[in-house]
Image (cartoon, rainbow, N blue to C red; front, side):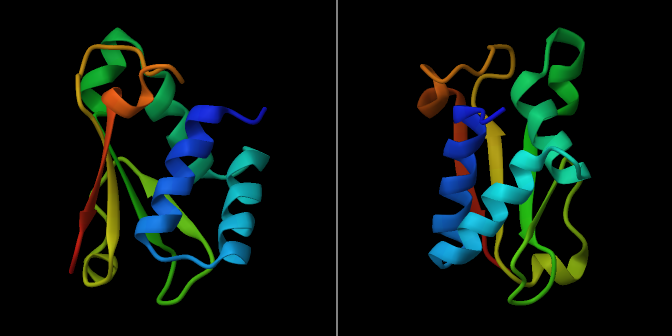
Length: 115
């Protein structure tokens, strides 16, 4: 499905990373195919329940390569070469609340980590 929470986060990521529209559309399509690890990580971040919450407080987004069209999304800190570029962190502002499309702006803080 086309989760509005995921769409909101991806839009913010693309703006912070300065992606052109066509790159954003590629990113959006790939994330919503649900097939790769990054889209699974995003779903896990958004849908975390009690015992998972401490494990998924932050989700890092970073381009797969310099000038890459795609973004990886991972719970672990990005590799060193990615940290030299721009990284976006989606952070759960309140560890223990469910992220809904109504509370998204309060529940998730988007941060830019510059290399």
